[in-house]
Length: 113
Length: 114
Image (cartoon, rainbow over all chains, first blue to last red; front, side, top):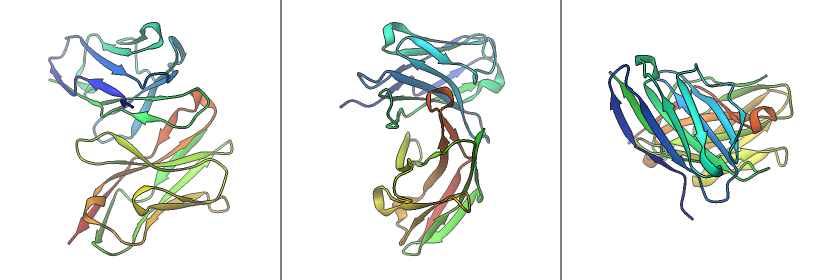
């Protein structure tokens, strides 16, 4: 079984540019979560999809962040325009409905310079 | 509201000695508790989880944790550390909010010395 795939694994962009992170969950996992770890801080919840629907986006830091999940399959997280404080590691996780079996991707390390 | 506090940001042990990583939790609900590990340049891996069954939970790689409601603790232990255990460990609590999204502690870095 393929795991949760995230790409790119690393991204370095300039302040003001746009970056799109992608997450491919495990096939059949309806739950998809995005988390972020900013340097020196704990890993924080960003948002939760069930299939293509956003269930909770209370953790999204501001309106520069936009997440989508096309057809309930892969998800993208766009940051536009990127700011220095957006640097960190962005994790994606997926799980079946009603199951605590989260599987995390390896994360995307975003550096904004 | 749910949260966890990892009491040590860094722990250093010698290879072959016991490991204890401490975690206290706070939860308005009956919590689900987890320990995750992250090795350098790797993703987060689930070590073990407690979801209201047995209070002593056994995980992978010889780790275990005991849920103690009276102490609101969920400490992670291993009888004998191995060099490959060096990593960052996260205590995590989950509840009904946000589809059972995870609330992470700040992490404990475990150093294992020869």
